[in-house]
Length: 217
Image (cartoon, rainbow, N blue to C red):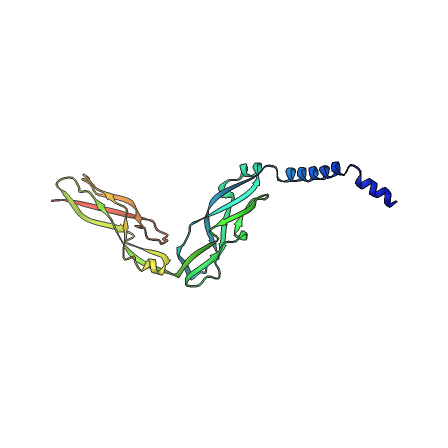
């Protein structure tokens, strides 16, 4: 019996080795056929921000996520199918370094994450505050000859803004976007948007009713 098995194994050994190698190659080919790599730049999102805190600064706004999937799946993926959501429920006031892990990335089925860059985001956390500030109409140009501005009325004349304390401390007044009155000869009422001027805050009121009244001189 032993002789029979030895003979069975030794006969055509080269052919058997080639057959096994070919079978392994075919398995890899079928399994990984069409696998393609690509990268997406995904906006960074945060969840569970403590109610009394605010993000003052962050080191990056977008994360590069490198993924691998079959070509058919990648062709069907849109950028908004991928999200990077980081839990910041445990942040403290000041500087925080938050890891971005694979569990932070939400992907369609059949997609594998290869790399995340950067893998850490640094956040500057500040107290959240509200304050009420006056609004000023930014008027450019001059009325028609013979007319001057008699009064400028704003409704509302002040707004409540919310944001990080250090950011709000910089704000003493909010201006509207420029209101062009070049050549007008009648009273003007317009809705003007407020101009953040690069400052970061939130407000429920982003437009102001501005009435410009003229008089002859």
